Image 1: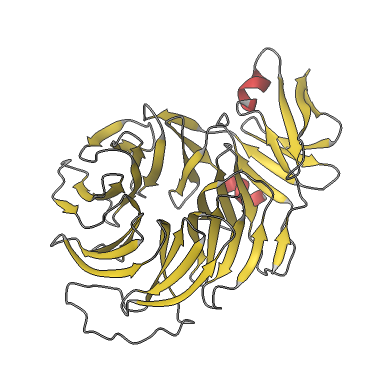
Image 2: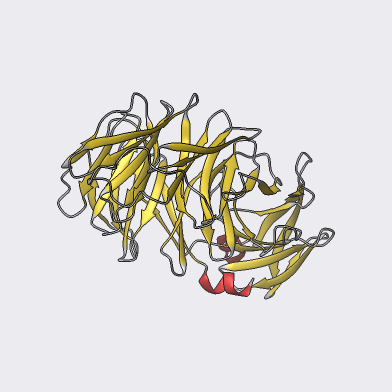
Length: 400
């Protein structure tokens, strides 16, 4: 296991790109080591020349991206301004999902689900039915059907084309916090603050199984499969309505810091690990590795196949982790303080963490609630200010 906490986080004014084009042609920059005060400097554009304060070195500037090096530590951060911003929610945007076909889906703290065009941000349809905040929303693989769950204890399925909600999954006794879709979507799995994870037959709106009942609220879940895992045999014959669960494993992160693995088809716990703070986000790095974000700002990389062994801990900020996304060889981390930073994933966890970073700017200290990608060159970020920001990062990531 390797740990990292001795590199600073470099920050920049959220609207730095507009500032450098404006009258003053300057924007503040800073660096901060964890548990220490931040040190502030300045980025200036004068007579066509751009310069940094002492302690920083300008590496490159393109108008929509700027790369700055912290001289003492060698930390290099490329800041990327949003390509565009869509103000789609009157209050907080809680979750974001996009399809390769050009449609976006986002949920809000007031129970609204918006279907919109990723090119222009034009709202195609508002899906109504949830009462209270929506904690998770996802597109089915078809790109036509939508899944949402939230504070009303319900998981609802909509047709995005008609706006109708033909299926409501009822059974949890507390808010639904997360869900995953099994293969093509005949079955889905939901996780709840009631401590349970449930497997559902969508077509018949029926709960096929309670996969586990934990003593703490489940905050996040993820599904994986690996031929390196030896799974227990099924004790019962599976229903013919259960499709695609053999060989699958469910990872669950809880409010009390518990991380659990469950063999879905066997309904059996594979392992459990207690982390030092509440789990707030999960993301698969690979079928064998899981990224876990915590409320204390730590990010754990954990082996799924080696008994939940900790491979690496990243802890450069105390700001709670709100969202995680693996994009190419980057692990993007969205935090409560509005920072959205990408760490390069090395091929070996024995190597020190790379000092090269990507940071998506634009959120003025507003918490980053979700991150998603279209699988190509764009990343979408949902924040508490109700905006969804779109970034073009494909070429930038290739050059990092």
